Length: 149
Image 1 (tube, rainbow, N blue to C red):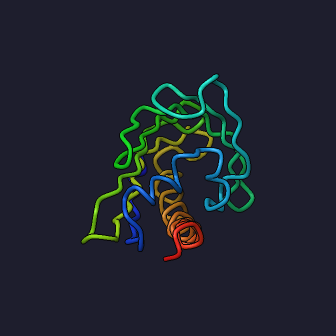
Image 2: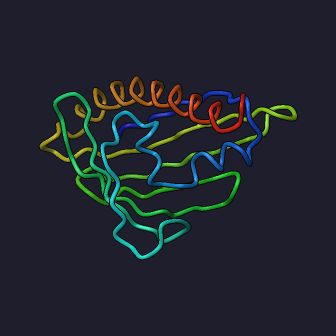
């Protein structure tokens, strides 16, 4: 199992940050590893929403099937991965002072045997941590462009 945690501080309120992440389909704008998102449920937000995310990291491509398991605006969005890679993930947004927010992204992922199992999880976790740190910089740009930070 890979346990991955990345975080940053954004120059925006939790409500403004939530405004930038609540549209799941827009995650491809700041997640460099997310190529496309296709909803597989009639809902596009909230608990129970399901979607497929085409993911590309280097030469590796897969479709990550996810279900929203937590939806607590403007604080938490949680997912369960139910595709080839399984596990759970969560974004949390916490106030930092009066007009800034801490954004934390946590994932616990299990890689299948053909992706190296525990060894793949170790190396995959390292690579994903680097990719997701870059993603947070993309999120910072989105939040700044929307909220003038």
